[in-house]
Structure formats: C-alpha cells, structure tokens
Length: 388
Image (cartoon, rainbow, N blue to C red; front, side):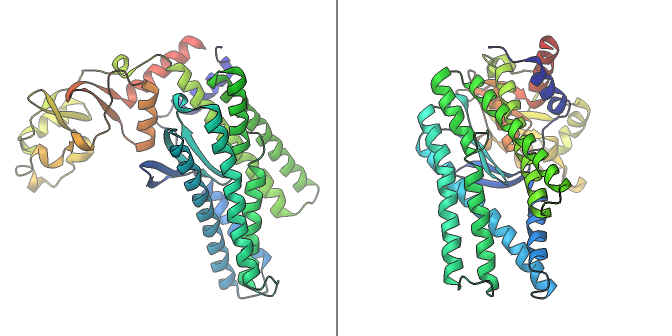
C-alpha cells in the first residue's frame, strides 16, 4: 500500500532539507547499542525541579529546595534509564535487533528493525515497559514508607513524588499510541492481523499524533479554565512530547518504504582515491585539501586498512612531516562496514545512530565502494520529487 503524499511531504520538509535530524544527547552505549537523551528532557528536567521547588516553598530554605528539586529530577531520569535497560535486555533476549534507544520523558523508544519485528516478541516488549515502571514505582513507595511515610519527612515526600511520577509513566504507557508501550502493543496486534509492518506502524503512529494533539488541547483548556498550573503545563508538554515522538516514528516508516529493495550495492560509489598508509601528512596535505573530498581510503594489497577523514588530520604544523597516515586513520577493525546486500536504510540508521558520514562496503576484506550519508539523502530527495 503506497504511503499518502502528505506524510511524505511532512518528512522531506522537516528532515531531509537539513543534513541530519537532531536526535538528542549521546549518552554512550549499553549492550553495544547507542543511547540518546531526547532534547525534550531539557524542558522536562527543569520543569520537574521547578514544580518541586514551588511545592516545598517556605517549608525549608530555598537553596535546599533547589538541591532537592534537581536531585529528584535526576532520580526520575535514572528511573527511566533503568526502565529502558529492562526493555532493551528483553528485546535482545528475544533475538530482536535494537538499533538504538532514544530516552523520552514518558519512557524510551527502542528502534527495532523491521525484519526483527515479530508480533509476539513485540507484544512482550510492550508489556515489560509498564511492568518495569510499576516495579520502580513500588521501590520508591517502599522507600517512602521506610522513611516514615509522613508529610513532615522531606526525604519521604520526595520518594512519594518519585513514586507518583513512575506510576504515571506506567499508566500513561498503556495508552495505545506509538511509540508508547500501548502503541507498540497496538502495532503488534495490527501486525498479526494485517501482516504489514509499515501499515501497522503508520496507523499506531497516527494514533500517537492524534492523542498527543488532544493532550496539548486539554492542557490549553486547563490553563484557560484556571486548572492547576503544573497539571495544565505537564499535560500540554506530555502531549507535545508524544506528538513529536509519533511524528518521528512516521518519518522512519516513510524512509524505510522509500529504501525498500535498495541495498548497499545500489547506493555505493567508487568515487574515492586511495592513499598509502606509510606516507606522511606533509606529503599528501595539499592533495587532501585540494581534492574536495572529506574521506580518503587507505588500501594495501587490495585490502581496506582504514579511512581518513578531514577531522582526523587536524594536527599541528610542526608534526606534518612526522605524522604518517597510519597514525591518524581509523583502522578497518574499528569501522562500521557493510556487505553488498545490506539494506540501504540500515546504513542510514547506523550513520544517524553512530554519527558517522560514510560506511565502507567490504567483501572478503576488499573495498567494493563507499556509501555516504549525503548520497543517501540525495536519493531520498529524488524519491520525494518523483512521488510528490
């Protein structure tokens, strides 16, 4: 079933005009999987801290309120991270390839590739999310009770807030709106019925956008009718976060459909010039600067030894004649490489996940070509023009 034109235009206008879509702050890797903190956290963390400072204003010194507010917001972030560790572990345990994990305020969104998405494991991953949040909420409630469980105990009050936050995350994720766990469950059920991954994802993501916009509207109505400021703002902000995440999910499906049947062999280019690893930077400097290329391959005896990018050669002038290419190159063993038949969309996702601009296509150690981020985007722009 072809994608409607309007979401294609939405994607290409909001993403492909630029080089890369901002995906948040890179936190490193867990189980070898890139983990990013979505930029919406930079709104949510101060909002949570301010809410707690206002709530406890006058009960204790302001500076202590600020410390407690910041600590509570960071503990909430830690609880979301713990939740997603369980999510990711279960997905990996079920032989589902997780490309990356993006941490949203309402939970994480593990990106599981289409060929690894099966209805039953997907449903299990969806169930694990709310259960994990309920367990974390129970831990905070136990701490609240252990600390006295009374309003006069400030640490107990904070544990109560963290219990409430995690309980709300568990309940919120039951909503059948992708990428919430409820939406992931909805996609699994639709996948069972339709057998069409793209269509199931589009429907569940559209549900997520609709519910997100309804929450924004509800927050505005609450503000207009004099509702509590925290509840009003939190409702609108959660709606915004959900709509943003659902839109991102729609974009991924559109890109995947555009690349359907396209492999690394189709996208690779051989427009590159190899350089010798024993040469010094002083010898090849002028050639590198004047070539107009940003990536150079290092090949010996027909085998790929590594690549050198413009970022690798930012070295002081006094070291030009003593620094060999082998000293600054990224060795082949550390590179992300691809076989000829690897789906092109997987390459694009890897480039975004690991923030790299090119992936060598290698067969039995021999460099067959290079797939660049720029070439993939040009292909998508061309598809956009043809379909729109």
